[in-house]
Length: 193
Ligand SMILES: Cc1cc2nc3c(=O)[nH]c(=O)nc-3n(C[C@H](O)[C@H](O)[C@H](O)COP(=O)(O)O)c2cc1C
Image 1 (cartoon, rainbow, N blue to C red):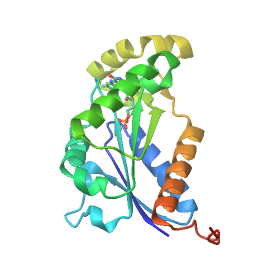
Image 2: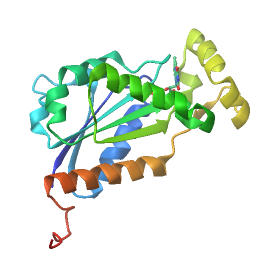
Image 3: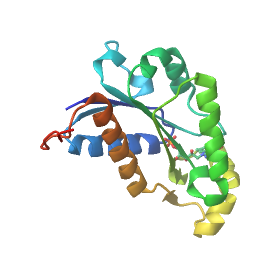
Image 4: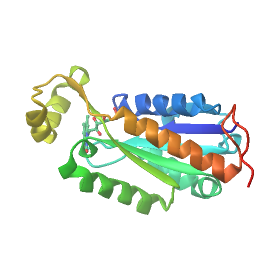
């Protein structure tokens, strides 16, 4: 059994929801998975308490959460010494035409932080018009105009996250960490070389 940290930044909660799903999938493999909002780290927080780290952030007006970027930049050396993964949540990942834009956000994040995660996941996010204030509503109607036209949504809450892709990412990350650390999922026997 290994201990996984899943640290994330979130605006309206979609990245938190995805982090919880990743933690559940990793937990089902017999590992310990702890989710922490980057802004709510306890004083006692230390990366050294974990065997592996998964970091998640969402895109708001072309940027990831500052707190996530700053955390990664400040802890780059410690992150480089352990198995790690990064996942990004954005509307750009919800459509084929905007996948390149989403990949560009990832590229910028890695360049700015100098971090090289072992695995990278990109997931579509959500629109939560019921939670947006007036200005955010206007902004999002403009940003998501084409997407809303495609889905036939006007201003309801809609989720574009592919949960199977999230589960597959979690399984891939867990398998990578198991291989790297030489541990096996709970309930299975180590295979002989
Ligand atoms: C104010 C605002 C700005 C956004 N800007 C972008 C953007 O520039 N590009 C993009 O792909 N998605 C953008 N999104 C979509 C978010 O990435 C998406 O809603 C995601 O689910 C947010 O995750 P979170 O709730 O964890 O913050 C924006 C969302 C909001 C509310």
